[in-house]
Length: 304
Image (tube, helix red, strand yellow):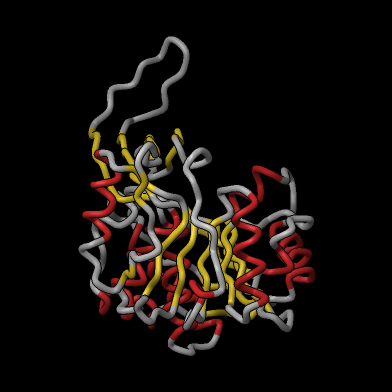
């Protein structure tokens, strides 16, 4: 295998993005404005963004099939030479997972998800972690996600895990860097104070805890319990699909470059903010200089 710095483990599939003026409801049909197909899945999205920032990435997770969507995602991934695909599995009899996302004019999306739970998963081994500094992991799977988090953490790999928002989640003690969605926390814990909840989680993980919240301030706590915020720039949101994956990629790029946490969060905010301006998670990628320029204009503010 090639020498890589980051392993992205999790969802690999295709996104069917449908732009519409609203969502369907009983007796209320919608008439889509566009219907297009894009590379998708949290792991592959993060890998593509990291590759764009010239980071060597190893990608694996669910298997894909020898079908139209499997061919589509492989062709997309092969366009990115910094992604090592040797651990990806394409199997007979497997239906490649895909997501239908209805995107409304505010850029928000509603998902119909097919095949991810049923798709076979690659089991991570210590050999697959050789040379890896960071693991980017999504939790949208089964027990293999916890096994992956534990193995990486116990092997000395820094784990960046998305949406580990439950204080009793078994992956939380194996989470070095948590990137959680504020809106997702509110859905699961109505009325909760987001910052208090983040501190409760950080007290368990004892790592970095980051809460993104759309256009609102990003809230971050370092491993020592110090906190700060970063205000995302104002942008015209076209499609929020994959914004969290882009954020995680920008953050990991900065950690890989040994930037401090405040500057690293600014890189995450920059990547996520540029992503939402375009349709598809990875279809239109900004130039590296554009990400760098925006990251350098952002400022972290200590919590008062």
